[in-house]
Image (cartoon, rainbow, N blue to C red):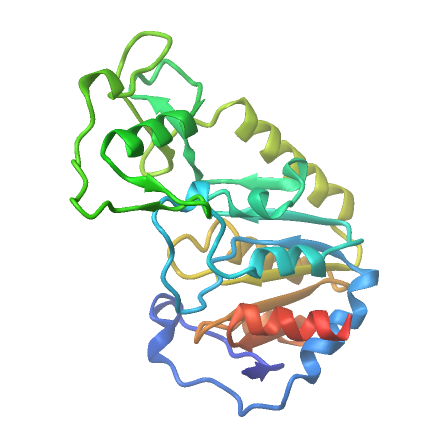
Length: 277
């Protein structure tokens, strides 16, 4: 695990292609992790999208089974007693499955577990768990005690009966998953409540001791979490920006004195923090 207390100013090209730069400072042990941990009691904490790149395979149907490693649960334990809020671009529901408070969670990009109509006039979403379970069973998949479906020895049908083709309950139109891919994405009432709660949390704590803890955020959608975290850190001299990531732990020069960037496995880093708690 490499820790980087100083950061470099990055060109636009380097931000798009972070794997091509050579800007790491030699490892200095894990002292910086524990400094942040011991200061956490004085910080309000915002946790962003967490991909937890642990170089592992994920089971099928991640929305309805736990992640293969207990990283989310350990992160929840680390946040115990902290005034925190989670903003995430993940769509696999793992924060809620781990026990994070839904009222302090903003899932900006949707949820695998929700359907929306293709009719743009219908601005609602529907839970799809019952349909998923019925469709998996109809294809011959066998659900194990761990909640994971296994392929039967004779193989799966890979088709469902016409009666199971999901339709919108309001007008019978086709449905798709509630995932942001274009401007047809439905921001339903729950989405707007979460957005408002996140905005209110930021407003109430904007000039306090805030730790903007960013874990596993890549270059796909930096405008949602990474760039706003940089801006809010720059505007608040009492804020700290912490970035945990494989090969992409960096921050702009303008906030280098307020930044802690650690190149490493999120699970291992969180384990180290818990050991010092």
